[in-house]
Amino acid sequence: MDQFLAAVEQLRNPELRGKPVVVGGDGDPTKRGVVSTASYEAREFGVHSGLPLRTAAKRCPDCVFLPVDADAYNAVSERMMTVLREAGGPVEVLGWDEAFVGAETDDPEQYARGLIADVKAATDLDCSVGIGDNKLQAKIATSFGKPAGVGRLTTATWFQILGDRAPDAIWGIGAKTTAKLAALDITTVRQLADADPQRLAKEFGPTTGPWLVLLGNGLGEREVDSTPYVPRSHGREVTFQRNLTDWTEVGAQIARLARQVAAEVTDRPVARVVVKVRYAPFITITHGTTLPPSERWPPGAQPVAEPLLPLDGPRPTADSWAVVFEQAAAAALTQFTPGRAVRLLGVRAEFADKPE
Image (tube, rainbow, N blue to C red; front, side):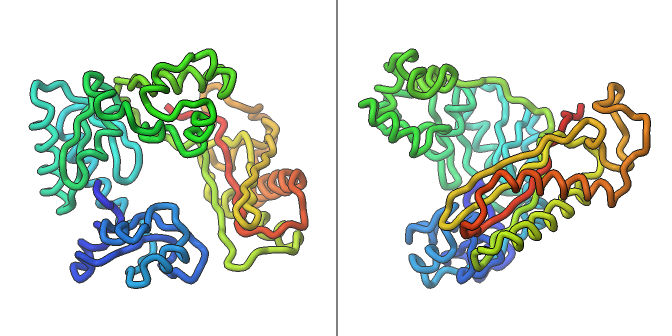
């Protein structure tokens, strides 16, 4: 979907069409938070996803800032996904606004234009479609189709289109990896494709190094997996408008978040409780505590056929389940260095199972 969150807001508020719109946080650019989506008009001022809201306001004082409205975006997203599934092929959902569609057709461009028209009819929003021989190529090709168009990138055209570009033109390669590759005199996709896998294995590890060479050659998965997405964890976090310097307050906030997460995890066993601390200005560290088997199941949950813990003995109550989380989070917190200014805290439950 093109500029999805901003497009939904412009659809709901027609007076915003053609104006620079930023969606992020609670919509207050004077507070800490980041841009979730910027409209194309806002992007002309250098505003993009992940940018601090305060920085966005400096770059574009005339931007309209709006809070994230997850319910509205979920509703539109579901209509879009329904259209894709009705096309007949497997659909692999990547997020609110993005999915892979598997298709066998002699005219992929016409097929893609049909999807664009059907999504437009169902949502009144624009989308772009990328075509490729695999998911990597199709993902990258969407950038050539935006806005509201079709892009195509195949094995036959891979080096013609991407060969002289920097490695970060490839989906999955970021700025840090690109910088490390540049230190090895690998500055283009073509050079990455020709690199020695063993050399990169020494620099990036035995799995990542050869994988980067495969990416450089445009190789990737072809199968579109329509299995519904099942989250592997559930968590909550909070960004503080003023840094926390009192570690007692940090502990109290972690306890509050741990109890909140415990109350929301009701039907799946939990293997680990993880605490996230973001120190000022922007250094993020995580530590976790593994739960013993006897404390992994929430109260009222139905254990699987081969339980992950002994079922004899009393089951936890809602309060004792919260205590388990709070104590595990407190134990994880002891692994951090106290005294440093903290701007964000989070607690996450990592699930012990993968439902059918």
